[in-house]
Length: 167
Image (cartoon, rainbow, N blue to C red; front, top):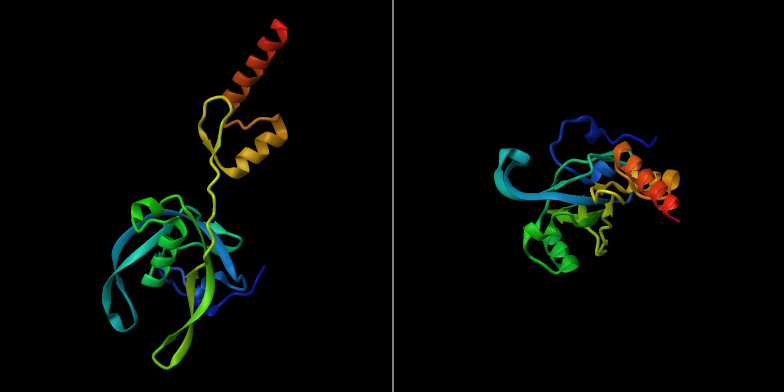
């Protein structure tokens, strides 16, 4: 288990550089993108673009929504070739810890890394239902084919038995 940054002990609503702990990067899947009112330091409120992720915890990192500034939005547009936030859904992004200048200070920040991730979609061999990568891999290991449920396993076994009887 890694070390705990003191900011992780507070109830911050958004992902920050401190959130990654000792990790230098994390790859997440965008679930939705929306504009919401965010209150920052000194009580100043502003409408901000916010990325929400499918992953809720990954590698000991509690995944929260991330405020997406113009620099990061431009990078997502560059990586995926679209400025439309609706087309960012289900895309994977690698988030890294970097630094930026704020007034006279250099402070940690989050940046989207210039890496395009192909999203693999795993489907059940029998019914076509989408599977997580973990369930896909476990099913392949155990049964030799990707399956989503005991029901689909039974159907698969029935199909194989029928095929063997016909041979």
